[in-house]
Length: 294
Length: 270
Image (cartoon, rainbow over all chains, first blue to last red):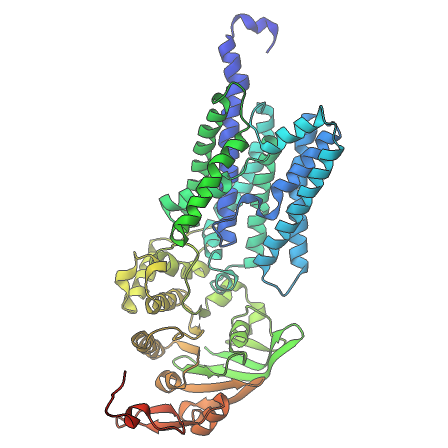
């Protein structure tokens, strides 16, 4: 928009187009992607307590982002580093687990994810020590907390197609992914090519998570909580669970992000709010016990 | 239609669990596998199902070796009935049975009304049609075992492989599941099942195989294989096969000490 337009465009419209609209669109995209990836992983790993970060995608993206900040890259450069960091980490985890044959594949995947994720966390701490404490360190801290402030429509133009690219295979394979939740042997004996489908699910969920984490930072808990709520509403069948989780994630992040924006005089990073809500939710789930995992 | 294992070596990597195993399963017969814990029954089943490769030899259905078949092709010929388990998520009974249709669905499709009709049909044929809407994690172990059998039937496979279908069931449910297995053999299914109870082999087995110490010790007609000598050697405890008044044969462990009921007639049994 140029100065000439200022006569016809109100400041309200500018705020809406440049600030509010991208932010709402980002809430929708990030909430849907994290919750959809969470639903896919909980079904794949037959465990209702896993999150989209179980294979280290967020830790890897975080490491990529802080490296980008340390190197004083542009915003776009930091986002690209975060995206690639997330993808590379999961690829590493997948290759490690594939090379350890003869073990329970799912268990090895999860354990490798935890180990590599912890390693990435250690590297992030190292970068924090090396970073300039007045300029870079606050930027790193803020990024790691996760926030949707300052998102532009141009960010979303790249992220939205990437997320869609991840959602499509999950939708196409919705039935077989549900069968995977019976365990590898049973799924295969029912006719599912387990190895291929597992790779498809991991690639799709990683693509979705890495592309939104790159623009929003690490917003935790949504991907763990929303599939739970969705299961309570529509049951565990993945063909219903996936759309329900994505819709709920969208609604939840819209509400929480609006709170983050309006609660105090200074905006609270939304990642803090989701964690504040998520931790008691998780404990409540544990207290309700197995039945609640429905 | 026949399921054939030829000179099979089974195991994982360098660890050979059993070798030289050859067997044939025909439609309408029940082959019961007896063997102590750790003898390799589960490994043999996994190999027969193509879940792990044979170390040597081959498994073939109608002359086609398993390694030439995709998972969906195998599932249309061989159905697996695992031990009754609880799923992580609360699927309905109908959901679990519908998963049996997976190998019959077109790519990227979910089950349709025809699949639903087949699933309900199979549930009814096993006498549990009223459970369709129930929560699979909340029904009894015997009912879960029947649900898993129903799921296997929806695959439309001529052969059923059942891993200890009577394990952890109470007496009534064992009898119920065994009765259904007999009916299925009567309908023409070829069935392989493993059991720890030789009486169950006597009840439903048309043939029996004994697997122990790294191979097939015996295979043949139930009456020829389930003998006092064979069972005593297999389970390392003296066993007698006796005939009841109604003409059925049962296995009885022979102990030195007297029968507790007869030894203390005044007190009666607890």
